[in-house]
Length: 380
Ligand code: B12
Ligand code: SF4
Ligand code: SF4
Image 1 (cartoon, rainbow, N blue to C red):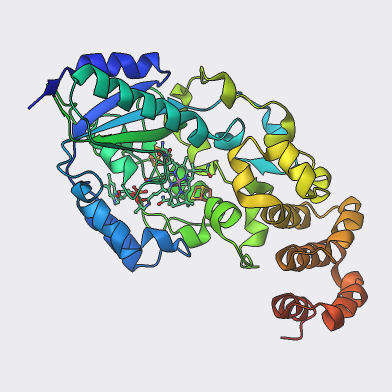
Image 2 (image 1 turned 45 degrees about the vertical axis):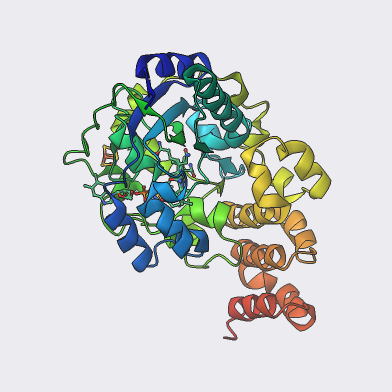
């Protein structure tokens, strides 16, 4: 059996641009039971793929992904680019994007590099190396395996935190049937101690317990993954976040060790992907959305979902200057946009909006939007 020198692999991964790399055995993640309990509790919300039996089988046994899997090579890539002044990020007239989405889509950057690393391993080991590359989308518990590979501990906010770098980094991995001469030792389980900052800072109270996140309440889930109507009770808590959320990372004391990424592609080209004026986001059509966000991870949610999120932020802003843009959106092609625009108009104008909303209640073709309007008008 070929045994590959771990040191050479690690040096090559760093040459390819990754910040840290660890190697662990391809055994089930030690937190597998915690994940199964999470699914049973329904904390995965409508992310049905998290609970699919074939995907659970992969998490239980990595051999389902790569037959005779021996090792997992896990890489970390730092992404935090700039310290943007807080008053700009918190300006309620602006929508706010999570820092991971400021630059180019990380899947597009990391996947080819991991494939290049796997191809190099194949050439250097002179054997047919069976492998599978994942960045984010694989049915594996990345953070738990990364903890096993020594890349950091799991925080009460559920993020993987490196004691010298904080948590602003992505993970990716190669699962392979190759063995290595040495494997990394696991990092400590947790180094949070008695701190609970992230738990109390979460705007929507999304942590039922330390180390457990209820995605149904998480702004990151609601703004990115959730397709339909956002629970009106949660909307006022979402502030100006329009794509993802960084609160439980920003407040973490370990973040003081984070360093700016060396990856030029993770730096924002303009403020459009950091904190654009809400009026600009409300005015996006499909073409302008694509031109602005086509290169970034934001492209995935498409124009309607981003505008839906911006309607909530505009409602929270509460400024009358948003009314003309919101009024145009009351007749948007997308039902979610119309419903959330109505909520925002009502939030800003209060009972002055009643005539306008009544008019729409009688005409909107969508049952859900009419329900939303009836609720705003106190009719249900
Ligand atoms: C689904 C998903 C989400 C969901 C659910 C998040 C969640 N916490 O489960 C939503 C949409 C909410 C989300 C949000 C975000 N995500 Co996300 N997400 C994922 C994904 C695809 C799966 C995560 C998963 O399996 N969740 C199920 C839970 C049960 O598992 P877990 O997160 O590993 O949690 C473990 C711990 O809680 C632990 N545990 C349980 N009890 C206990 C007790 C103790 C004492 C200890 C020590 C541990 C422990 O066991 C669990 C099982 O392993 C991963 C990629 C992947 N394939 O792993 C990315 C991933 C986790 N996401 C990532 C990112 C960047 C984010 C955001 C920061 C994006 C943003 N800014 O908006 C937020 C962070 C929110 C948060 N606090 O987690 C990164 C995290 C990198 C890092 N340094 O940790 C990942 C790894 C993607 C990547 N490849 O880089 N995400
Ligand atoms: S990402 Fe935001 S909403 Fe989600 S758990 Fe963290 S602080 Fe709460
Ligand atoms: S804020 Fe405190 S409790 Fe939360 S992850 Fe960081 S150290 Fe742990």
